[in-house]
Length: 120
Image (cartoon, rainbow, N blue to C red; front, side, top):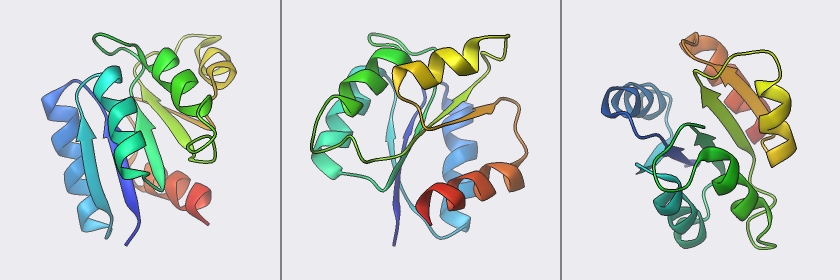
């Protein structure tokens, strides 16, 4: 079973993602801030990470840089899932090391297709 780490500070968004991903057959890990997200990535080595950008303590850009800067973790695909959808935000997420970018609100079908693409 593929393991996905959801790094998201909003309870409602975490619950929605957890429900969607568990129904699709994934094991879901959760973190509520960037600091905890980096620690969970190191501890559990997920197959993929869904990263919110606006996070407490350490934002999604820094958390992504820390994960991608760790040789043991840099291969893990990180998809930014964010309400930051202004021009340039996707480029900024990719510069930080995100492999993919999905703007909120998202289509559940499209998000699952994007996840499958990176896990293939």
